[in-house]
Length: 514
Image (cartoon, rainbow, N blue to C red; front, side):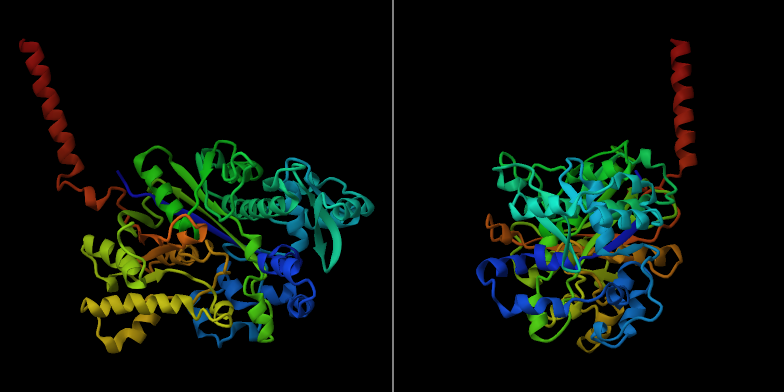
């Protein structure tokens, strides 16, 4: 059976400055424990404008308007210099402003929990009518509510406010009076991940050369869990997203694995397609409001803008081999097992070295590696360093250890086999998947042979185990042959047909003679 392919990839960002203040975990915790803190007073002075967010070079790279190679040539820190001619829409998706996102949250709500003020609704509806993928959804916004009614719900703590430029423009009501899992705060989190996933999926299916009704399965792999007090993580955001995006022929489920979740989901989707169970599978994830402004305190201390001001989302379509699109090498899978240990070297040996050696490949045979692709502008001020570069150095060190490169060539290895980080620190979003859009295009244009997606996850955060986690998979340029080379018996199709024909003749002669 043939290797599955990646037919399309989409990427979206949602700029949510007011949600940093009201929904990011760092800020909400600070408000609860230290409501008069200087940090809370200073946040507003460190929020970027939407224009600044659009002109930020890593964001333009994420949506496809700038290549990773072009980003690497730009002087850092990237936030100090706006990219001239930056556009809201890119070849992979878009950067959405907060007001439109509130509208998207509204149309993603099927339980009438989201209330938006009348004039605000009218403004968003006008914008939706001009939007390339949401224009058909404008009427679903309704007419809106009186602001006094929204204020009453927020003041009585039955709803959480939605703010634009510091002004209350809407709210999200709690879904149950006593169930903490359906509180207004949790509903904002869950609706935000759903809505950003919807946006990514709608960009994926826009002008798709596959009938959306032929998409049979959706795997949602964000870091949110939905459910009630009796089943806190029951799911299913996947079908909830598919419903709004119009994938009427699909079923689906949620897959969780902290930052490694998307790579687990890609491998699972590829397996479902390769097995023949489904022909077309979507992998999708929205953004986590909890991580907005996660390192904001460090950014403010260093007089920097709060750079974690966007929710990230992506969607992929994995389908049967068409002889054109890049293939997912399901025979080259890295697995960090329970017995591997948690040291950085052990993790990368499991995810990089072992699967490549098993396939008869060297580390240097892989054009590009995509581990944790966080933007270093965000992580360095917080003391975490340049995470992608750290990973490339460790992978390069393994190549040195195996005698595949000289130690003096290690700096060159980092440049040749790695990309600068350009994804928001949303946990699951940067881990491996940002490379797919650019890598797929390069392969279609004969500019790249392969790359490796590396997903790593911190399972210990759930306090159920101290184990680490990770999986990886190689993506390869399609050679036009829909049959797997790994399954080639050395006999041509014509020879097989001839053998079958001869066998049928012999069997027919046997029956007649008998």
